[in-house]
Amino acid sequence: MSLEQIENTEGKFINWAGSYEYTSSKLYYPKNVEEVQILVKNLDKLKVLGTMHCFHGIADSEENLISLKYLDKVINLDKDTLTVTIEAGIIYGHLAIYLYKNGFALHNMASLPHISIAGACATGTHGSGNKNGNLSSAVRAMEIVTATGDIITISRDKNYEEFYGMVVHLGGIGVVTKLVLDVQPVYMMKQMVYENLRFDQLKDHFIDIMSSGYSVSLYTRWQDKMLDQVWIKRRVEHGKENDYDTELFGAKQAKENRNPVFGMSAENTTDQCGIVGPWHERLPHFKLDHTPASYGLELQCEYFVDLDKAYEAMMAVETLHDEITPHLWESEIRTIAADNFWMSPFYKRPSVAIHFLWKQDFDAARKLMLKIEEKLEPFKAIPHWGKLFMVEPGKFKEFYPKLPDFVNLCKKYDPNGKFRNKFLDNFVFNNA
Ligand SMILES: Cc1cc2nc3c(=O)[nH]c(=O)nc-3n(C[C@H](O)[C@H](O)[C@H](O)COP(=O)(O)OP(=O)(O)OC[C@H]3O[C@@H](n4cnc5c(N)ncnc54)[C@H](O)[C@@H]3O)c2cc1C
Image (cartoon, rainbow, N blue to C red; front, top):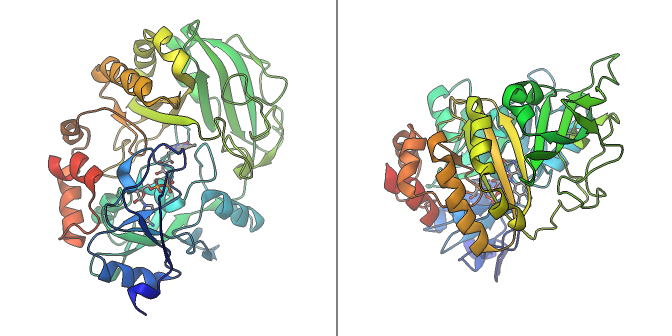
């Protein structure tokens, strides 16, 4: 088969939020790994699109884009090794349904089930939970088509050092065509929302609150020194279906489902009020068959700081409350366990995530990001790879001590920079 025979289209391609137009007007849709290999062998430059949920040009190419939307199958569930092998284009929501039907589960999910597994793992996408590593921590092995068109397989057991350099790869190593993920026996969950928790309770009880569930999210609009909502997601332990206290440090249980965005309808959110349901219908905040809170009219940025400094960092942001609130849908605070992935924002650092869901006004968001970054400077705040930020490229060498090793790894598998783009040059390669 030749390059021309592979399905492709020309046009304008825009990210999920409608906020970023990709530079290339050529998009290929390979139907199998062989077609991926043909593309990689024949194109000088290319980037892979996942589900296009990043807010900037990390997935962009000036020349060619490829989408793995047809490579979206579950290949094998191995009940002995507790792993599932998937094609890289599948989204979390679809894998979750398959796993649930077969009696298995993942350790965690992001706020929504619509994102691709390959794209999420590439950027260190996370859920919440003091003991939960980011989503890529479930990766046990990956199949990658490298710049020559050859296939390599790397695994946690066999390629220990390189593996930790390649799982959070920012799209810089090659085209990931398969992933092997850890699974565990199915579990049920429930979630309870508490409303109006005063910030001063976080001073002494931040860790208690963030440890009060398997996954916990705090929501605030930064007004009145108050959290609007605390979402506590618990795994159902036998005989403990109803173990939520009626109050949480003065906050009261919500009596009906809530939307994380204050005042918005809860029809698109997963069930709350302690109602027990499958893990994949409680871990994400939003239902698979609905659109998330802002219906895409949003911009996002998120910063990770030391878990120990969570309260101080939040209070530094709080000083900007009157400037932030008019431009914000909501802020979410989550925790993430440390990991060993070289380019993970959580590399060897238990972290707290301070997230801002902005209304879609770029000028306002940019100005506020600059101010927030200045406030968070003393906390070595690392931005999310997939979200907006204003941080100077030179800072990334400080954030990522293994950045030079990562660059060497990229050069080993892609010596001529086939998978490099402006974003990677700017924030990674030029800083090595
Ligand atoms: C509404 C919304 C909610 C979100 N919620 C969360 C959240 O809860 N937690 C969180 O941490 N983040 C969250 N994010 C951010 C999101 O998870 C990340 O931006 C993630 O990387 C998006 O995955 P994607 O497949 O859409 O990636 P894309 O934007 O399509 O691509 C991301 C990167 O992965 C690369 N890539 C994708 N597939 C492959 C492949 N097969 N081989 C090689 N490279 C590949 C791309 O080239 C690019 O570098 C959210 C974003 C949105 C819009």
